[in-house]
Amino acid sequence: MNLQGSIVALITPFKDGKVDEQSFRNLLKWHIQEGTHGILVLGTTGEAATIDKEERKRIMEIALEEVKGKVPLIVGTGTNNTKLALEYTKMAEEMGFDAALIVTPYYNKPTQNGLYEHYSYIAKNTNIPIILYNVPGRTSVNLLPDTTAKLAQIENIVAIKEACGNIKQVTELLLKCPEDFTILSGDDFTAYATVMLGGKGVISVAANVIPKEMAELMESSLKGDVAKAQKLNLKLYTLYKAMFIETNPVPAKYALWLMGKIETPEVRPPLAGLVENSLEQLKKILKEDYGLI
Image (cartoon, rainbow, N blue to C red; front, top):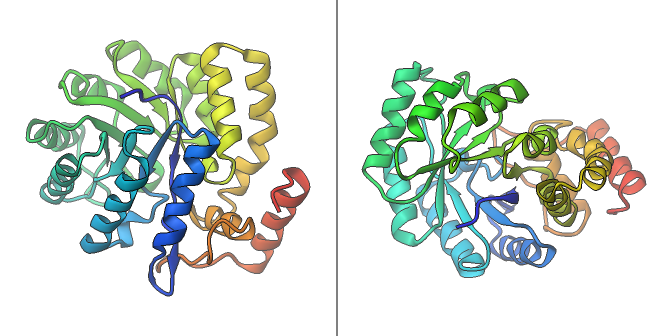
């Protein structure tokens, strides 16, 4: 499994309260065609927190049908319940996913020792490659570099999605973790910088909307084509911001809907649709800056 480049944190399309299976299949096929290097389903952007077990299994089945063997296929299996996270991770392993992305437990606010015990317990009871996921802005806990480096010694903990937004922390990860441990940006704003420092790519929200361009940015960055990568990164910056005009994944869903890629921009409560002002700003950016609508 080659974990690098642009890995999309894919949205989960809904229609009338249910998973829109056809739109989901279409998105998966589109990403393969556009050159996306890897696909993550049921992550934060996939609204995993409001998806039940039956829906989870069906989403995973569809993803495997459309993607398996074409690019690395990852599924989010993290919760703030260690036992349940293990259950989801075992399910991913049994179904044949290439890796499991496990977010730091949210709300509980575990210590660094608690984080180590959580991840090591799951890793030692499974064989699937595990990607740690650090996103303090959502979880209220920061997986520190020393803890990550300790976890990286466990054979099937192979990577981290680092979404702390702190380049200093990314640098410390590169210094402290084994050379074969993969560091991925979890934040479009730091994707280019992370690769320039020595990271391998990004798990991206923006790639939902501009898959080809994010793939090109990561390819040029990994090749060391600095001039091209810098130009692309600056060109895409406005879209990065637009994806967070309101809470992710609401803007991404509305963008895909405006582009005709999904039937509805529906999100699940407690998320809500874009307010009118945000929608107009998004339309303007998509049309005038990127020609996407």
